[in-house]
Image (cartoon, rainbow over all chains, first blue to last red; front, side):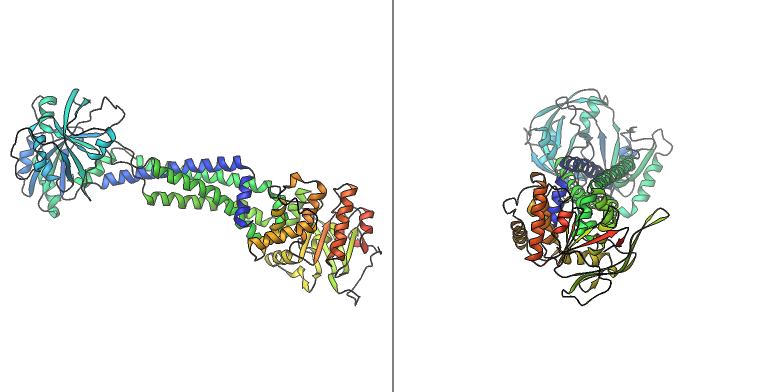
Length: 395
Length: 238
């Protein structure tokens, strides 16, 4: 026997209480790390996007359209190299209604604009040979040859179990009806790229023809600019063009646009932080209560141990260690469970949920702290206990 | 058995003094009231002596034992055990001193219920620098000495009262202290088991030369001691 086995024996004496307390810590730390993961993911989504690109949307709201002819007028602004359309589609997969994923209708300018962010890793060959503009990826020939072609992120392909060349059906919500698509390409995010592997991209002219009655309305214009240092001036120029029109614009960096997109969640990050702290505090009280009860039950034994020569410090350390083992053990399990179970979960149009190792380590550190703090009160009580008083309670 | 003699000061006896109390007072405070428990006790117990401490309930026997064992501090006066005045030691030093010099035997055995007999006896050795193997061997030896070599892995609830007390004695002597303090060691036992425990204490005194101070209400138990001290209202009366 050694001190560690003595601590473990003490924890086993009321194993139901130990397991229940540890279980509550597991749940709490799982929740804490998962919430931390959501916060990390929201932050990542807000930080995503390039400072070298601008995004122009309707000044009133992201849900309001902009006329398609703005594209040419924006492209004429000095410093703007290219303008692409990117339209939120928001359809549902009838085969897997709960398996939401983001879909965007994009025009041809989108592909060269994002060629540094994504690469086509699987593609269909076109039935008829065709030439593409120089700035387009030659692997996109089949996509450009077929009106209802689409390109899917490779993670989404795996999740849905789709195959290249397969026809898929989606149920439109913003644009009602059943929409058929043929998968003609699979993309992968390049290292450092800003686009997630969980999206579907399809041709804007398909949306325009079937969903807009041949008219062009754009949700967002993406602007490639030559000189990022002039982005503020260019954004101002673009917005000035439409200042007095029916659909005024708001132009900002793609990164600010992403942050604004995330801010549509309202104060969810704050709420998540408050919930996380409340959970941690609750567990602190539960663990402290458990330890106080456990030590009170052993008052006589602590008196005996002190009689045998255990110092106040040794008793203090033993009680703190017992609390730390319960809470740290539960914390380790909960934090690792969050990393293993929810890491990579699909959050819709946000990047997949990532429970970073730093979040896991933070959770474990918090568990250690809770263990120490929850053991503090009973440990002080036990260490200050006078032997004669403790033994009197036995007899 | 001889009746104990009150030794008012340190005397040059045959035995070297192992325990020496000089004008020891102990007063407990209950709210605003002071309750004197020991009132100027002075005594000397030689090394290897076996002393029984008798007296009515509330006379201060256990308090006296606790002061000698360093688990309580006198209000005034000195308590020497060997060369050390333990009345002057602070908490940490006193704990260390207890672990090396005192073996304590309780009336209700006070074994840790979740530890086996062997582990209970090993407990005081956790405070001593030695390997796990050595610790185990020593605890085993102590249990064999009290006749429980075949009960090493038994939990207290699996032992009789007499066996539990023998484990308590093995625990008290496993770190080889010079002084054994027994607080009514037979108070909770039947006559047969009590006899065995008293025999064991006698053996520890005669064979292992342990100095033993035993608090008891039982005159038969007290007869086994070399001398008997009587306490009444906090004062030694003989």
